[in-house]
Image 1 (tube, rainbow, N blue to C red):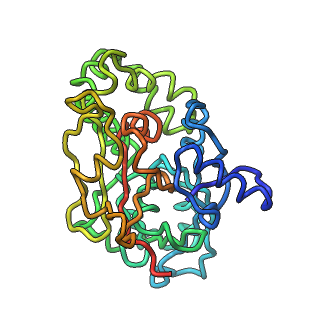
Image 2: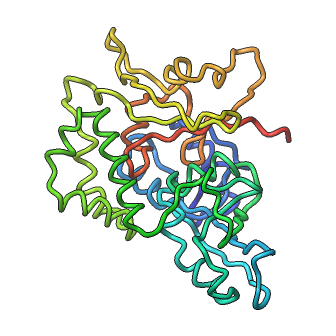
Length: 315
């Protein structure tokens, strides 16, 4: 699905058609709310900006058994797709602490329809994987007891989030540049990447991150594409393997090429009914989209291209 900024209803179908012409598979009924502006593939900076400012409306509700003082009102928040739950929910925590006794408060964690939400996955990935075909706002249950250690990593402070984020960025650059770019950066550059994400500062972040997106023109792309493929019907956390953006014959690999090699079940034959949606940042890119372009423009701040494969809804 695609989010919009100040678009009149009568313009929705026209805009959806424009997006389709420029390389995206999107239906008018999947256009939902707040911040995705139409952008052509040629207008690359607008694509980066629109990805950065994507938001998901969410409703946080305290788990009923944990209310001790008085009934807790829901808390509504626009969640940045590119960030992490534990990084943007301080207000949620303060809101619910008002109705809890201090002795009943342990580490805060979240779940959706019985599934604990992994804070170390970007918010957009969590939504696309678990809730992309549900009504908005996204209904998230908040817990302060019975932390599920078997399902979630503990997150005691923003220092833990920063360490995870920077580790993932370094892993991505190992795929792209044999770690040469990230290792050539100074410590203050690493800090600027993190602070840009933490404070939601697009220009501050991209002033440094652009270096991680560069490559020699003659090579036509990165050494390998950093990607992770998530599947709702798999016990495996995600698929991650080396994949070159350019074939040995010099042809640009596409999203379809990646899927055929890594997850062939996601690619249906011409006459077969569609079984799965392939979703990145809430939209379904055409399989013909070059994987290098997707990596440069639709990667999350951690520099990975996070791809969710979910069953087509029955309705």
